Length: 97
Image (tube, rainbow, N blue to C red; front, top):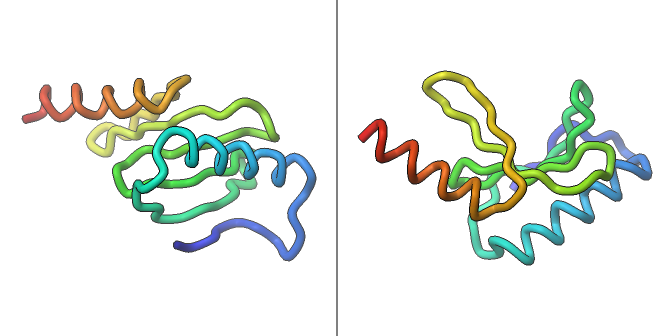
């Protein structure tokens, strides 16, 4: 697992967001393979990027969102729950398959 975008110290809102994405990981999908954990300074999002293509993210310590990117179109869709994000991937695979 790699850490991306963090400086040597983590700002309060980044730390708050990280605690929320880790809690969501523990509650919703522990055991899923983590590719990376990071901070995007352009968007303000902290994230856990999972191998299954879902990102658990929080912007400036706000509530967690689940991001799915369609790698064919580049379209990014945010979901309120892990189950919604996971189901959207299954639906996308059925359409493409």
